[in-house]
Image (cartoon, rainbow, N blue to C red):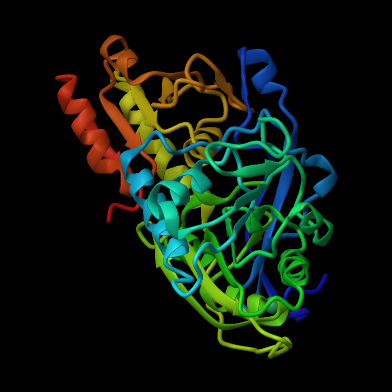
Length: 389
Ligand SMILES: [Zn+2]
């Protein structure tokens, strides 16, 4: 199988996993259905010529993104600040236009469009979103936004009254098995309308590899870019002047380009690190650590039932024996169970009852706010943070 971006056949295997849940954000009402959730395999490979990585075992027929899909992270102040940074960049993109039309591909429940409206106020015009997981009425949305419950395609543009001036897509392209076609579809939907800005946000595979981040490999993230491969794909799709920076503790790529008349380049080889993700070694280390806590009659809690926390618990503790529960500040997740391993998700207040000795924090970006919350509860715990910044 050739690289979906540059068509090279030179590749390495980054990581292999079997029987992991196909949808990370689905939670279950009882432990038995959680343990019976649909699972799939990951064969994560990386192109040695452009740096792009993909799950060669991915089966898109197994993915159904519907209104049950809840990937809301906006309960955290650190995440909200990051979202506002991105919204600010979108608002500032077209100062020469009086009311630029912003289109979001993968708009979820409209949280980001809402922030664009709040920050941009009169500096932005129409706000349109597309997402198959949108729960509201088709064409309705929070504030001025109009969100349509559909996957984005060149045909989607038919619902727009005016062409887009800025297109943004955050945390969507990593779910798409043919990401080059996804970018080409966005470029086609722009047509001859001149100089349209595109912003793309997605996890950085280079950060995942460099940190051996076992908690960042998910079945549904079938396409993972590094900065160079994302720039290459955007250029191949017909965007010029592409700049890619890292954000959110360097974990995410934030790319910006502007539509041009003709795609600039084709294949472009570059040195790609042959490093892989040594999941087996990290898992063995964590199991040993958590077993010693458990053997001393003490409890371990994981903080955060997002994709990272679930993946960590599922892979380090598949039988739910070492991790007592997962704490999450999102009320919609509390009282439910995560797929495969069946760990329970609880509210932070449950820590007063559970009295954990150890709290494992998935993301160093959240460590400060979690430390503050725990201190306010008057609890003494040892906080272990993955990839401490
Ligand atoms: Zn490639």
